[in-house]
Length: 102
Image (cartoon, rainbow, N blue to C red):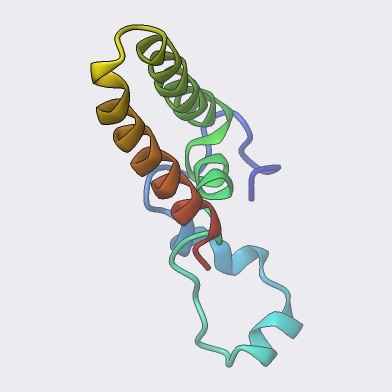
């Protein structure tokens, strides 16, 4: 899907609408003909397909800027480190979860 509209993609939440044209007959036969995945198997592929390179770049910038801010905060005071360690651990857990959802 990404290769057909690489710049802007198909639009938010349109993955399930346009995926049927990209599924081969063997996949549809194995998963019963009415199978229609609602989302890609991870958030990064879903962002590439639905928002294209532009949206994926903004999403990636957001993710990396959060990690950069966390790194800056960790270099400050000792009292806040435990609090921000919990926040950053939660953020990493959410990224792992959305990356591996099938």
